[in-house]
Length: 360
Image 1: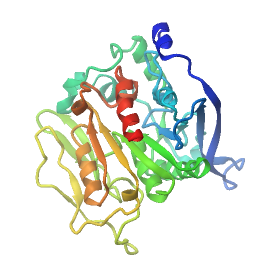
Image 2: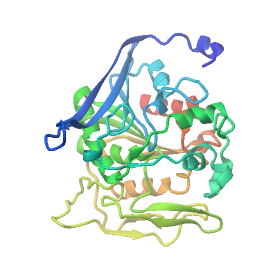
Image 3: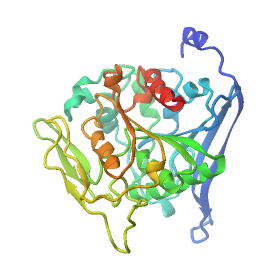
Image 4: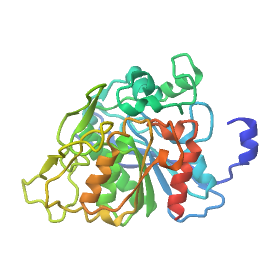
């Protein structure tokens, strides 16, 4: 942050800070009997604590907790923003990533990093134009090319992920529940890939997740989407997500019998040519009674690859009896954002929408 910004914001006064690990178990069947499955957590408690429930921030794919603690162009991140608003903040590194130790025997292989993927999805989607809204992207803080300071700073933060996404969901869901049990009722802020973990944690412990903020959560329901560019734009790909939202079965009403699976159907047509076609449950739809107990805010950016399909996630939840507020940033006057809203040029304005919703 520049000196002028720092002077305007004033000093950030912290009463207490530290770190710990949660979850994990000893694995006596592995060489050395290591601990596996643990999640790194760092926390800061502001001097003026104005909100009872701490905020837990969970990053997405290829990322680490640094998504929340600063931006590639040197500004304060969402962690500092919410600290200044009087929230205690806990920032994690997903299991097997960053400061949460990876173990090949327990966690399996890592997916390789691809700079070109990060550039096309996160930094400069307007150049590839793989989805209709990509051309609107203009909030990246820099030129978006190797050798440019903000681009290099962002790429330096990328970290390989456990290749098996279902395994990621199992490990991180368990670790987030352990974190909630340790710190008490909290607000989960999940981004992208971590959306799948947020549904699991809130479903298993709705008594401890007092609100869920899903920033472009992993989706769309049932099948992932491949981005083809014009004129066809979208195609369904990949596995069927067993719960529609993720690869871990959630709590349904009426319950699923042993061996029973949810029945899904594809809608007849997309809601517009710029959108992917949604999948939903076949009627009569089962309900998600535990998620229905948790206040949920979902955010979608104007130019992100989530713009064509986040409405499918909201519709899937609503069909299952879950009430949520789904905010399109463009409807609040925030235009040009891509997927990495917490580190783009107007990141504080996006954070303000979350902060105001939490305070309401």
